[in-house]
Length: 370
Image (spheres, rainbow, N blue to C red):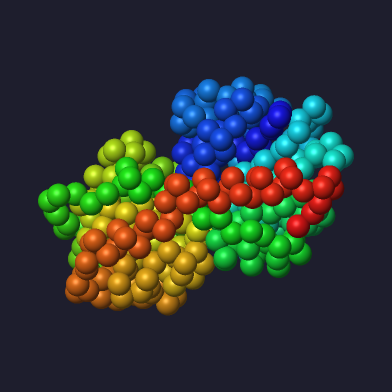
């Protein structure tokens, strides 16, 4: 069986890439198609596949500013030719789900989220505070409206949708009018485990530094309670966040998985200031026995047990998060119970669930849609 794997872009190992890595292991001979690829930025399980990129790869300054070519992404994804493949699986948070497949070839889309910036998080990315009032209203608003219409119009291309959470399944139903099977992303609960010695004295954020993550709330909340904060990750928002931070905040940049595990193990709690579609970081933290302080919306409602494996704050403000930090610091934590909760999101369960979905699609009559 010839299998084609489609992914939006390959620039680092975040949650979507961890799902892709499992697909690459399930189909070691599959070909991989992506808009843009920075060699060496993803795991060996992904890199060993033959990678075909789009014309975005060759545009000026694409390595640093590929996101600026967003208006070209629909044309880029539709130019891939998938003749001769028996199965197509896309891993999509942007446009990968809209790849054009030959008639009769089944297409499974693992949807991490419908495009946030095109649907319900425009202001976080392109609001007046980000790009200026004129550009927001007269440039980005019509551009993203057009992209949302295209996104909805191409929602019938996959044969079957798989979502990473109940929260995303609801967004798929709302924006695409499609049903989705829920398969939680893979978390390596063997690799992530508690330390033998606890040295917790600060809070921790592990995140891409992009607007919708709301990292500025963590800065404000830790300043309010006088707590130290360590931030793992990088992204376009880093300079802005560094300018806001005081001396109690440490920006660590990108770390290895071993280094990130040590950060989880040493933290009082891991903070999730923004709304996540699923959020692998909170589960990795809990696998290390570390509680989570999260905004009480989105995927966190499916991965954190309030008062037991962490605590929620009700609204995205620094004051609300600060109050939650104080509750978390006073909350007795059973780290074995926290880890036990995380094990339901193990890599093994993800692989078994994905195999079931793939087998169902392969064995279904040609043209079956879910």
